[in-house]
Every structure is written in structure tokens, then in C-alpha cells.
Image 1 (cartoon, rainbow, N blue to C red):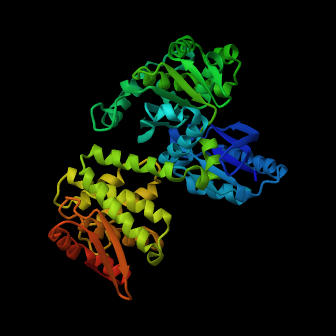
Image 2 (cartoon, rainbow, N blue to C red; image 1 turned 90 degrees about the horizontal axis):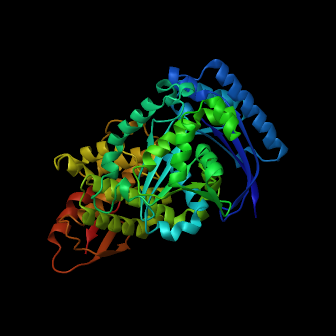
Image 3 (cartoon, helix red, strand yellow; image 1 turned 120 degrees about the horizontal axis):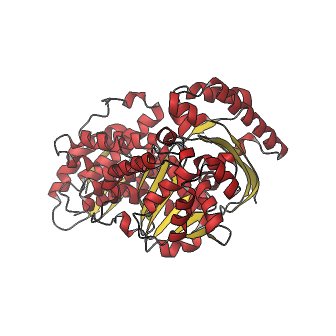
Length: 511
């Protein structure tokens, strides 16, 4: 049965609300929407703080939105309030969030950049689902230019390889330009400088990956892209539009010399929409020109629609999304030249152990998710050096972005990798003690399982293809299929089983 839900998006240049009717299949129908400009980003990106007057205005807008919610009889538990780069970077964000809650009852969830990628991906995938088969055979780039950041995802044959949230937005660019004079050269220079960040991710020739020149589908998300589509594109099935590359470049060239006032008059858009239009389209143009895409695909969906889909996350995402996340983890491993066969085999063993013991472990599906990613990346630190590679791996992961994982998830994965080798479960590496108790216990349990799995492939030869577990009152027996005598694996188990035995209280033997 469909129900009414709402999403409130506190962005860098406006606060928006969408009221929708959504069913368990993830289909939605917009019932109402509103947008109110507010200069949160201009305050934060220039001074680091949300100004007092801006804060008061934001609270008044949100109070008005709560009245709208009451009119639709939508309880607050069916409302998701998200905030993006402006609130995320504000030094006084905690007090702002507290003021909003005290005055409106709304609880703000501050999205990390990687969470924005995830939600935008969900919305795009849903909007262009009739192209899924062809996109699964092609390379694609998804880009959303916001007021505070530019989010980019690179997909290889339908699988997300990498996702980035760049500090490159239309409000940030204001300091480099004079829109009334049509001078955007410094924006273009700033965009070119970001290429250094992306070169490693988009470099042609890496196993399973392709460079920008091999991109077939260029997906542009956001209001500015939709304005371009309305003026030069063709609507397809009411869910997305297509714009010929030549038409888009001509459109950008035509409006690039216009002032904001001229854009308002010529395009019949609001002043708020016109302010960020040109820098947003210039950023899209820069990346588009480096691809072989002949058209732009512009979905009629974005971050807020991704949040709507998250209301039905269990039925919409499922195994397909999890496979996307693990593809991104594998892509990170390839970036640092990991032993892929060993990593995937350890992941297979670790998941087998988890699934056969899950009723005894006290762990949930999220722990399994973290286990698989940690197993894939457990030896990534060898790129820096095999000595202390657990420490190196923790550092690499903690400073990376993995599509589908929050920053807190990534921190947990980094600690699991840190514990996978020799570190005592009673040790407390830097920052570990600051985790909530439940998270510390989960990290230790997942790391203990990972140690066992890693020990069972000590020779990196994949000699044990499968395991069957037998549990007694105080012992776990591992019945393994193997050829010959698995001497390396037996030694690996002896070296690696202590943490599992301490954490779970069972002795472990390979029989």
C-alpha cells in the first residue's frame, strides 16, 4: 500500500521539500514540492560559519515546511531531513542542528559526500531503468554539480568503479568570476586542476577500467542540467531527457556570455536558478568534452528522489546494490595492486564462516557487509610495504572513499583491517576507543572472522575451496575440502585462531 512521505533537503543555496506517495516497489508520485532560497553556502564557504540572520531564515523556512507536513497529515517519522555540503562544513553546525530540532522537531541527518553519491545513484538507476541492459555493456559517468560540491561517479559496464565528491560548486566558484562580465576563465582553470585528482581513478589501461574517452553515457543530474534539457533536449518517457552533445555545447556557448539578468529574461527562469546556471553547465561541459558520449542523459530525479527510494531500501536495493558496493571495493584494491585472487578467496571463506555461524555470532547484515569489504581490502597495505601492512592498510582505507559506505563505515573497515593480522583484541589503536561500545565489539568480532579466513589461505594458493562447520559445546570443527596435506593452512589457522577463540569463546580446529 502506498503511503505519503516527505524529504526536506537543506542545501547550500536553498531548502527544498518534496512530498510524495511511494510504494514498496520504489515507485513514487510527487504530490507537492516547494523551494525557498537561503544563502547557507555563501556564509559557510566564505566565513566557515552559518550567519545568525541566515540561521533565523532557515528556521523560519523549516517551520513553514512543518505546517505543510501537518496539512498533508505526514508524521515526523515519515519525514527525512538531509543537509549537504554547507551544513556539513559549518563550524557551528551542531548548534544549528540543535536550534532546528528545538524549534521545529525536525532531526537533521548531515550527509557525507559519499552518501550523496549513493542516493543520487539510486535515483538515476531508477529513472533510466529501461536503459539498464545497454548501460551494463558500456561505460558511464554520472555528474551532479551543486552549489557546494560536484559529485562524480564512474561506472564500468554498469558497475560503480569510483565515486568522488569534489569541493567544486557554483557558490565556491563565485570568488573566481564576474558573471556580469561573462568572465569564467578562472572557473575553467579550477576545473582543469581537479583533473589531477581524477587521473588516477580514470586512467585508461588499468585492469577492468577505462578512461573518460571511453565513456558512452554521460548522465547530468540537477536543476541546471534539466533547464538545458528543457531548452534543447527531448523528453523520454517522462523520466529523463536526451540532449545531443552538439546542441548542449552550442547552448552553453550561447549563454556563457550572458549576465544573470539576461539568463532570467531569455530562458524564463528564476533569478535563483540563473545564478548558478552558467558555472554548473561549464563544469558539465568540461567533463563532457573529455568523453566520447554523443548525448547527455538528464534524469528527472536527483538526491531527494534517492532519499525517497531509501524509504523502500530493502526491496529496491537488495543484492544488486551490494554487488555495486563490492565492485567499488575491488576497484580500490586494484588501484593499489592487491592480490585479487587471494582477497576474493578470503572474502568467500569469511562469508561462509559468517553464514554458518550467524546465529551464534550476535552480528547483523551490516556486519556481513563490512566483513566482505574488509576481506577484499585486508592486504591493500602491501602497496606501501609488507612490513606493518595492516597499519598501511588502515591508513589507505581511512583516507579513501568507497561507494555505498558512510565515513563511519569506512572507519570501521579500516579498524577491522588493522586487527586482521597480529594486533591483540585488547589493544586500542588510535581512535578506536572513541567508537561506541557496540561498534568496538562488532569490529573485534568481524576482525576475528577475517583472521580465520586469512589464515586458511596462508599460502595464497586457494587450496581450501569450501568449508563445512560442526559446532560442539566448546569447539568449532572446520571440515575442509582440499587435495594433499594443507600444511600452510594448518599453520595459518594456528597463528590466526587466538583472537576468534578469545572473542567468541570457542576453540577452533581444522579436521
